[in-house]
Length: 320
Figure 1 (cartoon, rainbow, N blue to C red):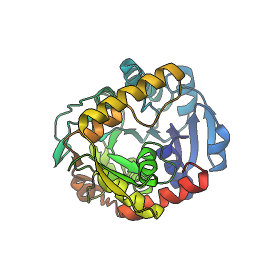
Figure 2 (figure 1 turned 180 degrees about the vertical axis):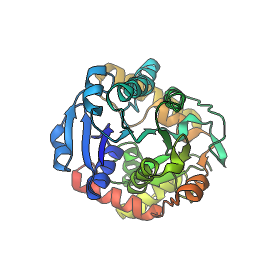
Figure 3 (figure 1 turned 90 degrees about the horizontal axis):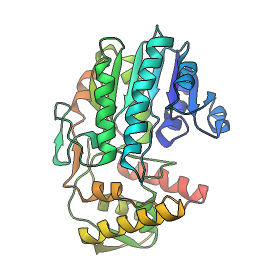
Figure 4 (figure 1 turned 90 degrees about the vertical axis):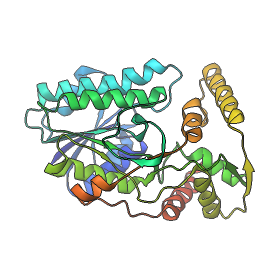
């Protein structure tokens, strides 16, 4: 199988490349920089931007499967989310129509953020109702992908929060835990998934005929909270942490300040309004039953194991 992974240099992208190479796929990896990282994983690097049509036509030529993971998770301009996350999806689908006539599957990395926050576990038939710019861009990317379903064999994966070695999104929680604190933001349940389980789910969406034209939440059956993530991080780091109640107003103010610093210095801080909106929402639960029933997919890695692997990686990489 000849497979293209866009965003292959990212957290989930590298996990997916490893899984594909391990099972024997010939992997082409689209990256913006550092091609040596994916080459070391056994992939053929293609250096370029996922919003450049010429690069995309070159990347998809001759492939059987496309996994589209490229995108931005942090941006100071809301329009940038749409330009990259939704815009690259349309450009890549058009490239597939032009240069990959034998494509057997196009898998889009969507997001739980495309659907409204909820304390109850939502299913795939819930309406798209994002509440912040990142989620809006992922919802639009999903709409675009499914609009091509009569011409291309598309499928959409909607992961919630992804945890594991190499992740930057959750590093903030680990650093708070390392300082001996567990921030209590209230009982706001959220679904999550281990990065390697998530990569395995993407493989199923590419392989199984039942996935064509469908959307699937890929998540652990057991939800947690932001507090739960920090508690597990503290345990993994061997830290006795103290629970500290944090008012929502303080979180929003700190996020705005962090984005101001980012805008002035160019340094992207771990806290931003996107993260604040996520942790202060009523909940981010999703129901993984459809993936289990139709694809036989179960995200079986326990939270403690996933957090422990992440903590070990952070320490070895010097991030903690």
